[in-house]
Structures are given as C-alpha cells and as structure tokens.
Length: 175
Image 1 (cartoon, one colour):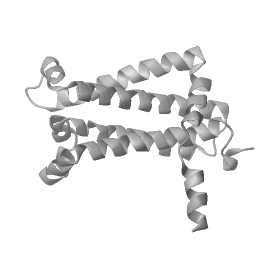
Image 2 (cartoon, rainbow, N blue to C red):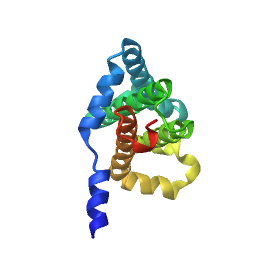
Image 3 (cartoon, rainbow, N blue to C red):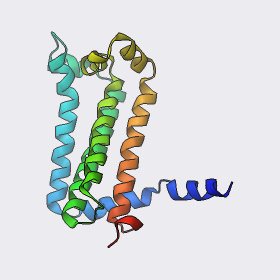
Image 4 (cartoon, one colour):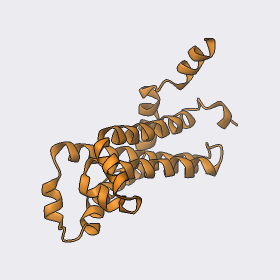
C-alpha cells in the first residue's frame, strides 16, 4: 500500500512546473516567435490535411464543417504541441537533457497525440486513418472524445516531464 502513496505523489501532474518552464522558455523573444509560428503552422496542418486528402473538399467547406468545439480543440492541440516542440528545442540547446532519445520520444508522442486529436472530425478520421480500415474508423468516431482526451493527456505528460528537466527537478538529468 505504501508504494501507491509514493507513486501517486511522484506522478501527480503539477501545473506550476509546466507554467514555470513555459515562462522560462517563452521569455526569450526568439522562442516566443517560434512558438506562435509553430502553433499557426500546426493549426493550419490540422485544417489542410483533411482538405487535401478528402476528394472534392475545399478549404471553405472544411472550415464550415468545423464547430466551435472543433476549433477550440484544434487550437488547444496546436498550442500544446507547439509549446512542447519549443521546450524540447530549448532543453536541447541548454544541454539539460538526459539523451537525444528523450527529444525524439517526446516529440514523437506529441505528433502521435496530435494526429489522434483529429478524432474530433469524422471526415478527418477517414482521411488520416483510412489505411486502418472501416472498423477502426467507426471505433475512433464512437469514442472520439476519449481519444482526444487521451491525446491531450499524452501531450500534457510530455510537457510535464520536459518541464521537470528545465526546472532542474529531474534527478537523472542533473549533472
């Protein structure tokens, strides 16, 4: 029973760690501009991918299909993914990382999470995950909000672990 208390205390997400690390990274003008640019590019990709992959789809039609909930979700995913990428670049340049494999793992999980974030749009799912088959698409459509929630959770966990490195809390990354 004691290991549960230790595990839950160590693995509890602390928003202040992410906020402090974000302030540290985004206080630099270059990183802030990169963050804004990446958020815009990622959001644009979320809109462009289904527009380009779905036959007879246009940008205006795609924008009309999205609801306010979809725009909110895509904005949140874009901002979180952009922040994670900028924080990973910052940690790499500051040489506060354990290994370069951590960057690849974190960035890869953010990209996968962002891809699964397209589950908010049924036509996006068909375009992006069409190679998985009809059954998988129906499953993702049925449980789309669970999938999207898990995607956001994965990005938040990656942000938290990166924040621990930046804030000097990660014991294995200390010199």
